[in-house]
Length: 174
Image 1: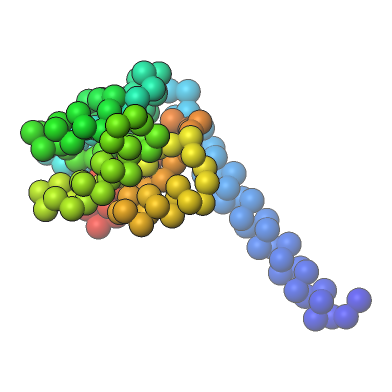
Image 2 (image 1 turned 90 degrees about the horizontal axis):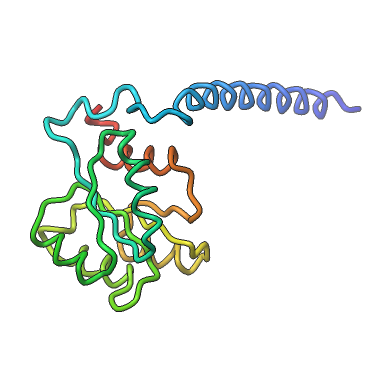
């Protein structure tokens, strides 16, 4: 074997070991919280009020799951089951985050997202699209209309909570 190839292979092995160690450490840290309903440490220290999320999904089984994921990160939530009600609620109240399904009767999630990003008072609210549509088209349209994140159902509660936390508490404010 040529020395250059052997050196490259050794470097790859060391790199893979480091990645595996980092992944194991992260997994160990996260696993402490995976079965717990306790809030994660460090959450919500930079805010004076508890953030409020609006969950928009026409499937009645989804909002309780999302609420549970957000509760662990000290995020309160309301839920609605259609796009028109979501826009009414967003215009009448102050929300810090929207978690939005795409496939709904009447106003779709993309319709809501488009309206939200066009209204000056609402356009700064971060939006996580939570959908069963894993297509590249759904992803592209969501980000094209201004979504801040995209999560496919079925989802991991801890991951959704962390994504919400990341949007609510950018690194600059922690």
